[in-house]
Length: 102
Image 1: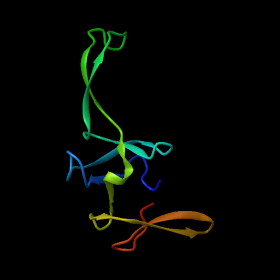
Image 2: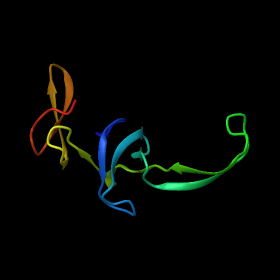
Image 3: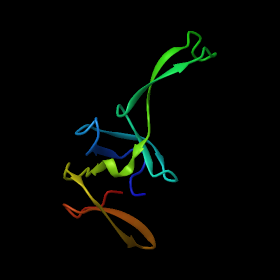
């Protein structure tokens, strides 16, 4: 998976289409990412020590990685990613401007 935690992404399909936000968590085994303020669902929560009142909480659900597109930090455009090997390490590159992302 080429999208990592902390990347700025744009949602390209679904009910939250067009939203630009940050990846909070990456789930490579399931090919999913959790994006901040995207795919909000309500969850009933029992009272715990951390949350003594319990109640209904809003949480972000994972979405498939194909529904998001990385926003290049240099050209500030949604773009596809290229990979190249530089000194034995993989480096992610922007397909639009050609600059390194990492």
